[in-house]
Length: 148
Image (cartoon, rainbow, N blue to C red; front, side, top):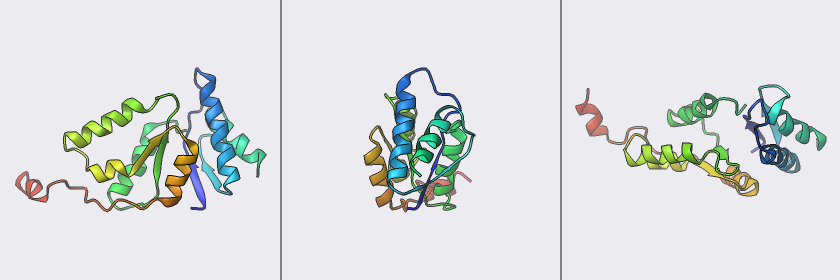
């Protein structure tokens, strides 16, 4: 892993903890010697990550993250995706993905291919050791043919 693409909000949010975690992420990526790839400008949380990163050398829309997840599912990419959670912000979204697995709209291996947590060190370690899931998009090939 040589670089990390970060999507952050173009606003700083309502609680200081969001900015604190963005700053910690920028610091960690710089300390790891990783290149930072980002879009969305230099304001809000994205600006905080970039500023702190630059001092040592947005996830604005859900569609950016889900586009990467979909590309992986279709075999168009193999990069790790992670939700760095702050005080349970993404917990409802992750719970929905778990429900999609339970209801057989998403393969369990593909759900487990997405990291979710609060610990930056654990996230970076997971990303460095990442091996893409090899699950087929289709949960049940026979059923898929019956539905045609």
